[in-house]
Length: 552
Image (tube, rainbow, N blue to C red; front, side, top):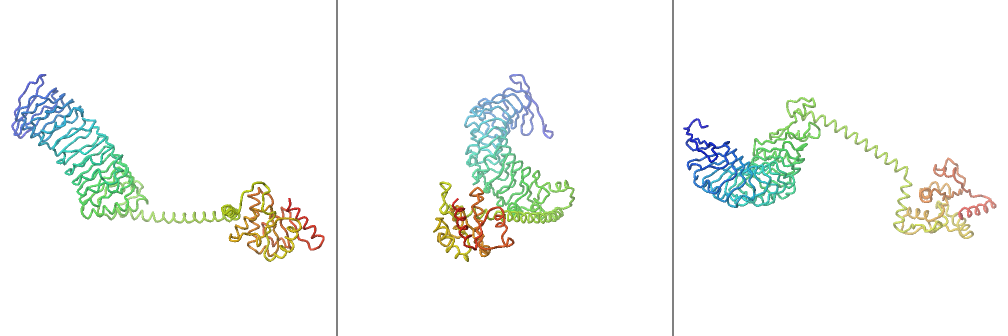
């Protein structure tokens, strides 16, 4: 085992007649591993290093090491130790390394001050032992409590101000108190990979959990199912050299790193990053001015050789940061062969430009098509839309009220006419119908409400009248407001009166069919109309017929 030193072997019979062998050299070392020991035998006082690994030792008696003041290294791993006593390590004042991993120690079987005699301890390894936290009263530099079941880390951990190395990986932890690392100000290496910290770190928006770890140089957060990290999660880590965030579920990288002026390696491999955002690449470029050999590992991320990644590829071609990624393999899988990243970017830039032109062209045509379709629909239903708008507006202002009974109208007829024909309306029409035949008429100059807009007044008047009398003349056909009144009456007939004919056309003069608008011509062909006569006998019949029609 030690070829360059003098070896002396002795045999000590144990209680169960197992053989214990010791090998001596300048610093006496005893190898008692794999000897099927059930208890710890008495160890000579001049032994400095001893291993009892891979035995069947069940406990450590009080004072068993009380005479071994020179012991520096003690390995008790892979036994069946289930209980520790108050003075189990008494006398080991010079012990620097204690390994008791892979035992069956219950957290309730650890006295509070059991490690107090180990004043020189530098390394403590107690992996794969516990399923609950316990108190550590020890001043040491190195602690390994990985592969246990500490699923909740409640702090603070006291008496560990000298600690520089802490491994609490593989512990299924999903909850960490904000003061857990409060006394870890001298910690330089923190290994907390393979836990479930993705349930707690995304909510630490102020970076309180890691705030006291100002001297940290290596931080391993791999395999923690982290979906995202807050911007200031690492704001205290100004001395960090290596940051491992691999094998998580990161889809973005909004956390700040430009204050890590000594960072040399950032591992983001095997996450869900499809690219690196511009703000993050700027931070990397800033860091590359302080650390010329800074490297970022992006292997295993879904970064594609496509237009979606072109800004990242552009940065990749010009940055001083050493980037590990699969881009060349990705491009080769697309049967694109490149000898350099610049050629790859040039090809994509050209391809994506044509894609952009195509997308813009197609998008423009689709927009124009949609506008034309919408405009066509709006034009086709323009009168319906305008009617609905003015009806709603009239109801809102109280000008239109719901009918309590079918015959609940303010007027028997709304008279639609051109201003040039008002002489006929006032001297003949209203006289014969209102004065002689008691028909209530609504005319705009007399009955419209002052202060309301004309369109609302028209719509309200039509809606509040049983019929609409349209006095057709050449002046009527030339008036936009007259045509508006006709179309509003038509909409009222269709949508408010269940297609009941409420329009009565009165031709004041002879008009050729070619001069009539199509919608009026359609109504003439399908509905009856009245022509104003030029003889005295016809005049009487005309007014009687008009009264009869409006009285129905």
